[in-house]
Length: 450
Image 1: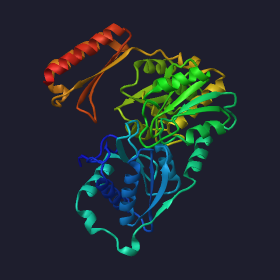
Image 2: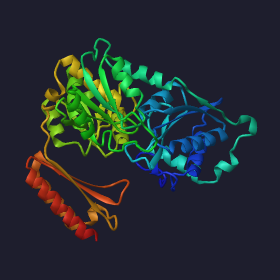
Image 3: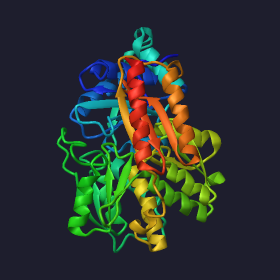
Image 4: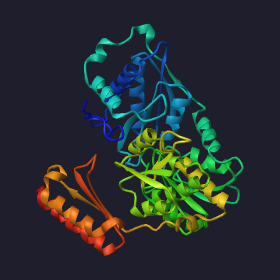
């Protein structure tokens, strides 16, 4: 079944504009109960959100839909996306719902689902939910009045998640003596993240912890690491941690304010997991956007790299299918499958801090071991979307440039999943060559796509 409502990470759009309307949320709430109605007894669905103004109306609409179909709602309020995945599984709920548009501005919002195992739903199940929400079947399957569901608020949801996070940090280690700046992006982790690091012994300087419904991701958080970088230098902190709106991704900065992205974090953590014998199959899973420098770094240390399409859900799917336990994205989605079912920015920061404390080495020292190759990305806005193989001149040019780069460089061409853009990325040892390749391919694509 094709999907028109669901994108690569749930349903997303401008709040109060189709498809992100209360009518859609109501229908999705009804549909998810119908799809997961596979056992006797009461059906439970966890609902959490970030700090967007529109979260209130979507929370209410989803709750109404779930209750109308005889499901019970467990409301946890503002909580990071991975926290909702954790609670869905730990509370034996049938499904979890996250109301968030992640790193997008406050005007946007989204709805995504987790299964009872805490993992994001596969494409076919999302397609089934969409089919039911968009059809007429819901009118004929409503339960009688005595079977309508109830909504309950879980008052200790934050505390449960904090305990879970702290338990992922080695018990024999402490963060005492470390000064850490934590930028919560005025998002879902604004209460949780500072407390976690503080309770493990660190001195915490929190920023981005005053959400007002409209300032989430607004010149703060992981998309603006320059903010935490400046604060680290100002207060002379040991490092800075920057989370996005729903706290499923993290970017860090060292004591100099230098940005450390997901590739560098993966390199550091993969090396430590290999050293301790904890890296399954001695392999890391990353996307096609991870720098070739990461691939070379891992290979030199006897670690393989498996690449997937862009999107943390594809990283997780490959990890589960092939039996790997660590992977992530350059953007900061990092998945430690031995601990969690999805990317978790706070959890990932804790694993990185554990390496620092255990080794006694500062982050700047650990991060410099990875040599990052020049990487250039350019977007070409399209008049129409045409399969790459149907652009013979462009495809030929890509092949020729790939030959010129050899095995020390790459070219990745893909269409955006959310915008009318063709993304062209090239990387290699020579910055000027990479720049010229991307420019030439963008010109070629623009000419053939007009």
